[in-house]
View 1 (cartoon, one colour):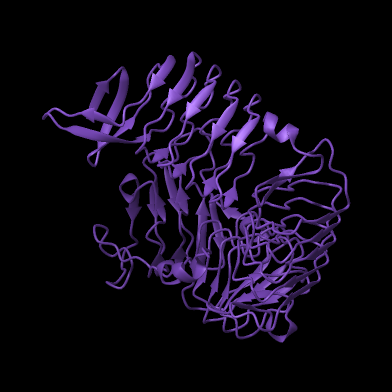
View 2: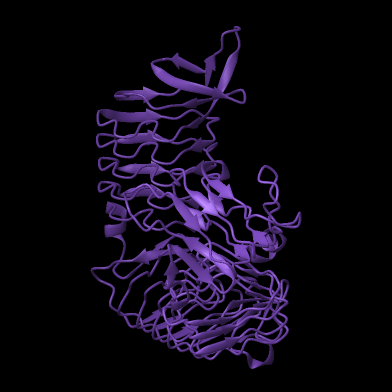
Length: 502
């Protein structure tokens, strides 16, 4: 339901009103409540996505006390906006909310705000006065990029309170970064792409390294992580190609996906012996989540312990150096992109206790040309072996990996594909094997078929004509086309363990 009050357009949801997109101009004062149709009032709770986006004639906005949220792109591109009052009741501001408000000069952020999201005030060229609350815990990437405030900071490293926000590209050239004492957070993308940095020293006050903080600092060789650090965010040191060794303090409880991905020269990873969350058992040169028995960070010298059960998402992406991997028998699950982009890998041996090889697990291992599979069913996720030598050979568009139909591609692009004959010997059809508009495709199933992923046929099974071979028994997965028997949903069993949330 939509209501217009005081020239402002609202929609109602859950007994609250939200300002929605309209052509606003001049000075706007948003009320704290609007009347309903029954003589009562409705509280105004939020500014909807793109509500004032590109309102070029908007000059000022007063937001009411009681407002709780400002959605993504809410004021983006308001090029004449000079003043906005944000009440302390606002607890959530989303990405790009004020991006390109290039006449905005001063902002007082709400006292309870904990996160300033990515690109929030990016390219607000006139913004020179920003009052940051003491409650601020993290500043997102480019949140204050290209503002007058950024340009006015002292040369080199830029701090926003106790957060290392970033660096001045035009002035910072030091090879060693010794973060100042009392810094609590290294912000998201704070030093991303800096090509002069070679050494990093953190004080014990730092609790968190944000996502992408040192990503693509390609000449960073040494990192000193102090006791007191708790979180290393996603992609924090990705593509730090000269990094040689990492010591993980006992206080670190969470390392995000791809934190050390593509660190090609990384040879040594050691976790403090008294860390209650993580370990590097048996000098394995890896980080293992002790709570989930999951390997989460590896390097070129990693020796995967026999007792690990799970290889986590992105754990070995771009760093595995051996030509063959004989998977230890305790490993039952390989996560998303776990071994992707490893050019050295040529042969893979899978044991009969393996249950799940997740989507893109070995994607773009271009030299992988042999896989030894057991007789039992193993679930392969979407494109688990995409862009490998295993998937190069096709038979009428069918890409087979062992006894799995891993993908099917229409051979005549732009023409109506009429039929697909799945080769005999195929026992499993994998997740999203048919991931395209079928145009009435007739699929001839083989007698050898035993397992079919419940997401094998996308967008929906009803778009295809499935043809069961003659003489199959009731144990055949598609004996009854209207009530097919699908392969067991193994992925759901591993979801909590694969989940990388800290």
